[in-house]
Image 1: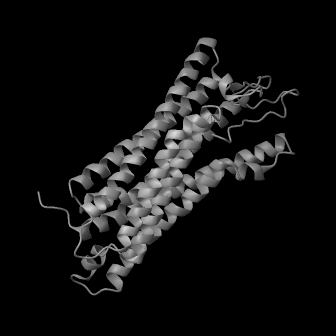
Image 2: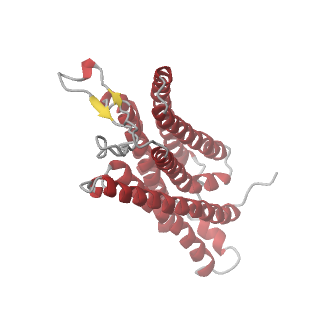
Image 3: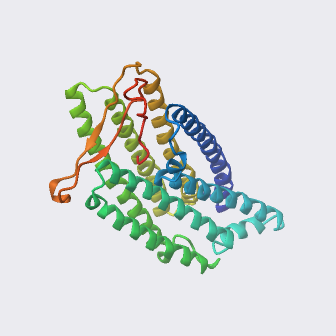
Amino acid sequence: MSPIALLSANLAVVVLESLSYGVYATLASCAVYLAVSRRQCDSLIKPSTRPRAKLLSPVALGAFALFITVTAHWLLNVTRLFVAFHNWDDGPGPRLFYADLSHITEVLKYGCLLASLFIGDSLIIHHLWVVWAFRTRIIIIPSITLVGFISFGVGLTYQLSTYKTSQSIFEAAFRRWTTGICFFSLCTAVYTTGFIWYKLWSISRALKSCGVTSLQTITRIFIDSAALVAFEFSVWGLFHIVSYQCGSNLQFVAVDCMPAVMGIANLLIQIRLRWDLTQESMATDTGARATQLRFAPDDSETSGSSEIDVELGVRTHSKEDDEEIIRLEKL
């Protein structure tokens, strides 16, 4: 089997990432539409609701920042395509351009890639922190791996800026940085998704024994969401690691499509959550009672403070609960 040419791999990257980004942009539009629709319904039920507070939540800000970095990464890949074939003559010109990994567009592209992965990992860590009732000790390990990811990412970006055409991306000088990035990113993904799944699985069993159905639906959403993120990191990350360790140019396809894949996984979680909660709310009777799920930290972690509540309610239309709305901003 003949090796895949660098030019062919980069052309495939533009096509596949453009397709992935189109899906991502469509899902982003759906997410914005659902968010605006819920905001309008909430304002009718509770006119005093402040939408700005929800728009400034960590999840909303992280999703917006992720959209910017993914868009910038895609635009840089498209720009590189035009620069390679427009500013260079036909023949070896495009191949020489793509072989120069120290070009400013390539360095910026890797910067956007690392920023996207950093934001995605941060959102997962925030998700873990909320699910485990804001316990700081549960996020110590993923925070350390996130710092390691940043360190190796900065090192790889600097190494690329000094790249020479006589070198190879598969040399030891680049391999150690790339391997470190993959290792820390996978450690963060496996740790966070594993603990999120375990926590919500245990809650789902407790709710099932109590006969609570609405919270079982919400818990199932988050269990599936954790599985989705684990699938994205495991399968796509494994594809990148294997292709890179084998010295194949397919690793460019894997690494350049990773920001869009992460954005799609993030939005699928948010859209499914909002959609299922909306359907749950519409199916609720007018006399339905809001349900509350309480995450209480251990006694060793609190000094006489009250329990920490994370409310996963069902919208009701009774007079007593008219001010209750579906709340899950921190997740």
